[in-house]
Amino acid sequence: MSGSSEVAPFLVMLSSHHLRGIDEIIVAPLVNDAAETVGELEILAEVEGERLTLVISEMFSVTPTGLRGAVDNLSYLEDDIRRAVDRLFTGF
Figure 1 (cartoon, rainbow, N blue to C red):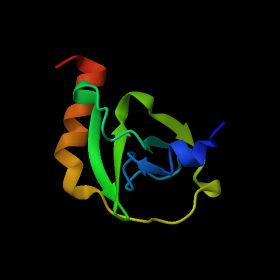
Figure 2: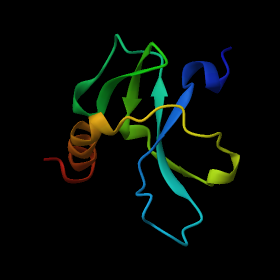
Figure 3: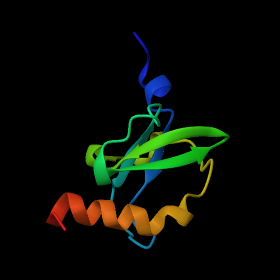
Figure 4: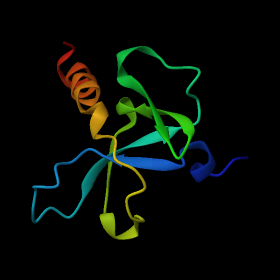
């Protein structure tokens, strides 16, 4: 059985960095199934030369203390991420 870090080697922070005083942040996993995207809730990304899929429908909250530092910046995907979050919560 694979460990979770093999299946989802990275998390993408979706919460705004402008929020203060909140103990948890919202993240979504980057998973190793880039060849099998499903609809508008998954976004292809590349981190450290590896093609991964950002799975918006699997967002969750974590306390940031256990996370390692930033590895990459996916701000170039901001519009795609916003559309996927909108689709998840509003259906549009």
